[in-house]
Image 1 (tube, each protein chain N blue to C red):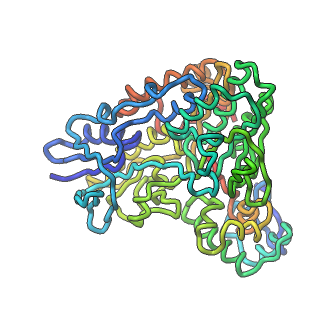
Image 2 (cartoon, rainbow over the protein chains, first blue to last red):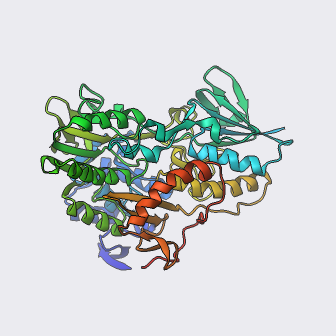
Image 3 (cartoon, rainbow over the protein chains, first blue to last red):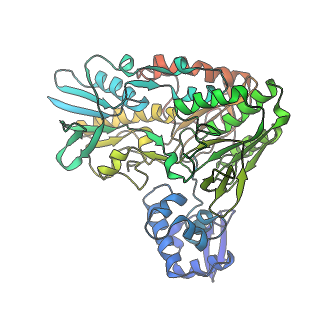
Length: 103
Length: 409
């Protein structure tokens, strides 16, 4: 398994840079991962990250629409927070595996 | 008398009615199944209708033909489940009490979720093939279509049978080649995913196939709306795809009754444990198939494998024993690739589709993750198996757990 040093901390990641152990995630690490994606985190970002981490910990599937229905942000807003590929980027910053949305 | 109540008489509910009637003594257990519709559709057959290979008669039969004696059948809409009171309220106000409940209400397409999809062009230039009406309307359209931009779009995931859209575009390629107008038809496949399929090896194999057939993939396209005047799809990041014929796989949701009962997620899929199949909310409620929020394919093969696990676990719950079975996410899909060939994939929650042979290691007769004629025959034979063996809950020579035997890493 690959490892990566982020902000002086060694974390387990896959070949695409997604955390393989969500327990290693901290808010400080999220700031650094977000920077790599060109994103400056705001409270709105953190609210989305918490939602994703919570859903992941319960073993639930993650979709863009589920974020849009979460009451935190609508889908357009989600694209605004994580431009381009919001679910993939948000999962990476949230320290959870890449969502296998289609199975 | 104790009562087992099954909601939904589709694939999952019908199999469970057959299996549980054999398990539970008739003098102790009453089994009742409820559904609002009397017709059972062989949904894998919808794919064949637009191309004139099947018609309506090939895919419909009455639901009662597949339910065993000794099971009460009620055809009525379900209003809600009251889990705390152990009863279900039907549309006309009748209350059905239960000791154990199985939710098998499936999933449905909701084109209304996407602005403009069910607009003026609906069933004129925009078609779905996940309903019998859409599949037949598309068959009529194709009879006289002279060509143009044929765009398949997946509005969102999860969807029923994630390989059906791929099969559709490959069938379309073959269909227009045979009609002699393939040079006038541009086929594209637009998807919110980053490739033909998310599991890496299958995505590569299927992506290459599409390329060979001159079908372009438009990945990471997340549909916001359809512009009926421009005849174009518009994504949330404001990209546009013009079409002359749009084949849509609309947003899927669970039954709204799940939402009304407070047992689901925001898409009305019933929340349940992915291994035990027990509802997250009540210990005497279980979920099977498309109705659940399980992170595996919404497909008949999954329902079939889950039914074995659910039968065991339900008996454990009834007899107050710890669960003995665990569902591994096993899914098994034949993929039609056109011109009389097909591919086959076999996978579960943890193992992606791999190449090899199935079900007998080294022998087959089916080939995994490759195109063969035998795989195509497998798919055609499956319709017979579905009506005569699978729905009736009879034994099949395929284990409900995925096996690595015959697979190559």
